[in-house]
Image (cartoon, rainbow, N blue to C red; front, side):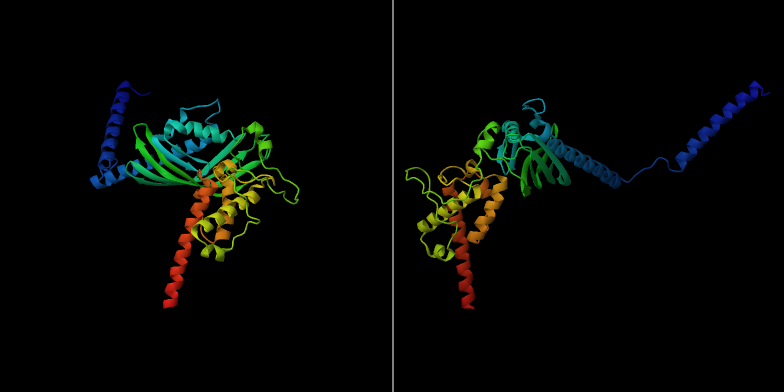
Length: 337
């Protein structure tokens, strides 16, 4: 049997042993002291990781909101959780300037489809104090309305976005964002009527038959050339006005074929291209046709702005003239060697 006196002595001994272990631990370095430079570097690294995590979460939040921002009806508050007041967002289907227009823009573009699903990956973040350059790869599927151009079908796109994020009092926010389309598959949306009228508003397939001569009328249209071809040799020697008219006629004829315009219709020269059916999908194919015919690079953004046929033709004429002059100087320099 253990006596009370022995139990008391044993408890005191255990306490002394525990104190000794604590002192020994302190002596052997459980408490670490770092040099100031190393401590500062560690603190900067933690801040860097925290900023990257917050910016990644910001991008993912935006991409998720692309699908769910109107789940319970139109919501004009969500952009403040993502963008700065002076944000600028550029897409193949339009541009946002300022926070006040962001919600309406996204709501309008999304409403052209029954459902959407966006995915983001490969987040690239380059920090510079309170700003950061960002790049992310994006993939999106868009399910058409039952009365859309492809009922129940999908319009899939892939590309990447580049932009800038800034640190604000409310956390990191996107100030600049630009989506670059790399590829697409399926029928894309076309601006115009409400979804309920979309199917009847789209150009429909038609039987190939001799085209009837369009009626003569005074309006803002241009009679297309007999075929969507260009004689580059003649174009190089043509005067400025003649060159512009030839390119304008070629653009009209190419659009007729590209958009499957009915024979009795002509392409208006003063209406914006987007209002005639040029969207992010058709712009890529149209770009390739123009580049192949003119033998010059044609930046896609020229086809997605609010340009008319006449304005586009003038831009193409300038690009062609500049390329021709460059080629002539090169030929002259080569001949003089």
